[in-house]
Image 1 (cartoon, one colour):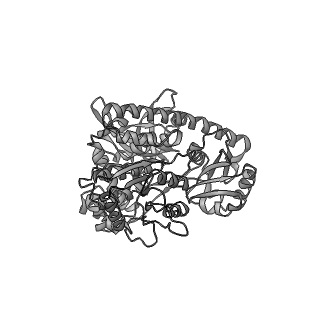
Image 2 (image 1 turned 90 degrees about the horizontal axis):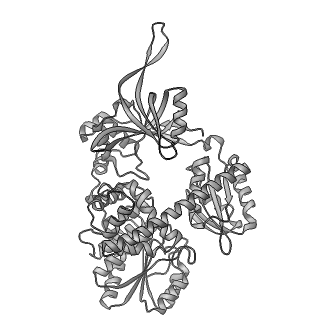
Image 3 (image 1 turned 45 degrees about the horizontal axis):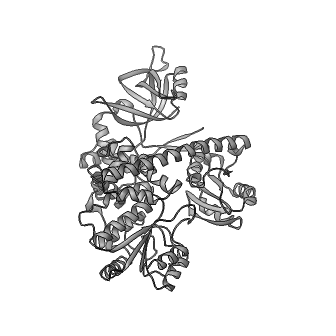
Length: 570
């Protein structure tokens, strides 16, 4: 696939910043590329500790919500938390239940089933709660659009508190309190809180987490829900990860153990790609209540049993995803969909819970917006994943007459429609699409064009000040246009990973004045997992390559050495 390599060329006095803050000029340049400008902003970015947490009372309706809960607890009224089946909803449910129990509340949790209930609170859940004597409902990671369900709860005389972080619809639900940092009248200062962080703020306002023991779960959800790691969010994740590393929590330790990772070395990437997917798998293929059981386990034995079950569910999810991905690629190639600007696939036998994952893989493979549809019980359901220059939600608005239901944002959306409308949906999305051919060429943004011989262990340690990495605070990207490679070795079960030795090559002239290159400095070790076998063949033909890389420390048998992770090559 063609790629456009683009150097981020934002200007600043990098050496002056480096001197003032005791950092490397390369680190200073990366900070500027993240649009952190001015000494105060840089200082706060580098600090990113608990002093950066905002006052929970800044959230609209949080004080009345806290007072309602205190009153209900004093009257021993039954409280029900209603969450969601993803990482954010699971963590939010756990935080609310744990915090309210500390205050002596009579509280339980219900999490909707993805397949039978769908997303969020609904009228049937309200009816069930009323029949079971529930007095007060507290939602988390959902509820901001649940006007009809909340209206029914009020008809039944129930108290309702909404805690959510999604965009509201045309009207607020008629709840007793609605806490959502995206409310138009909210002035909290961080509209990018995840649902679990909003729930945690409510618990903090109640004084039910004085030692911030629930912070790790808000941090876990912030990463797992792919929230922007800027400002307060970055501080929540940075401090939360430090707490996770020293946590004695049975559930987190068990999940790390079955995932064969050391909790003491947890980084955001481990939450996003190892631990988090195990929790998400419960909501995709079973019940998210099983993930909640893991978090609430009191003993190591109980936690390990549940953790193994979640790991098995995630392994099944990965197997289903791999088969669905293979099928999707085959259908794209057989039908020539890769020539279209928007790819719409109907995979009736694929489990609807993994449609979004497969859509994401199709988007990555073909650098195009992709929608994957599956056969639901009553209609076709699906998920879309988009590219940065195509608003999936806005484009679905333009074909809303074909859809039963849809929702989302520019980069992702969910939808449902009748099967007979699939071809028309594909036709009209492509007919409406204004993307040009150059828009379909993915851009790889390079922070610093940097000779590999500048990479040292000291620089890598300095760059660690930029972590945690994630959306809005991506890992630094470096490139060297002239690298010589040798000592090539393929490894891995399918021999598709590459290990090699690399040098920087300096441009010079030979005795005839012709441009040539010579190897300089000491070699570094490098590994390539993405298209390693392809790079192996390329380098055998010509050992002079351009590389995009991430510097890292390789630890093996107690030895530490600098290593480059190759992510792209030319």
